[in-house]
Image: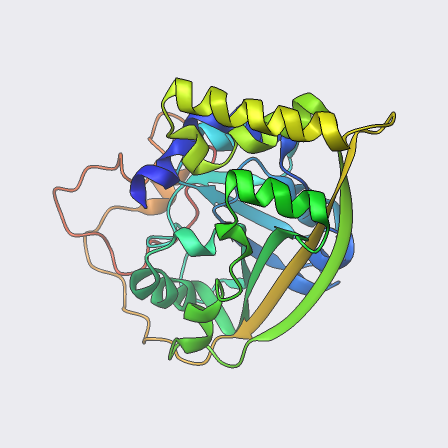
Length: 288
């Protein structure tokens, strides 16, 4: 799983060019219409971030891969960004209205991530999950899935949230849209998949040749192929939160770290001579 997750660093450009965005109605359903403070985990290149910022939400976008966040910063300069993981979120306890995970929740270490998500949410705060899944009820899409695999279409990706003692009942909604893909777009879409990125070059070229043959059979017309998606959305309200620990006397002032332009902003690059604080306090953002 770790190798697959890290593989996106090598295909960030393909991911940014070819992965679809999300229906605006889906984004509104996930986080609400009112302006909220939102932490996005596994934000990638900012496909959902862009919609949330445009809708007036204050977004702190996190991703473990700087290569993905580099595209996000270009796409959405109005979002704050931090190199961070879902298992250690760089915001204060009880400070966030919504935590949203777009195409990312299945990568998390759920026993560690779910209590951490509960920690940062305000009482009554919402965990929102979303996946774009190909509609394989269409014959040519089903053939594409047979070539490149269909694990992203699994129906139980949100189950760990619904089974967690930290969260309540999962509310669900679906939306539909179409993505126009020309030949090069389809190749980028396939390259952006983690298992394709990990293939040896001869294996990857053989797979892309099969994808090209499929495009030759079905991708006629000025708009190429129209790839149908089902956007599956989930919401659940935080139910259980651990007591917030008081500040530790003499600990590092995380405010100074956040404001110091020379300080590292990547969690994982902060020295670990001492145990991490119970409440990381203010934001660590704008990793450079």
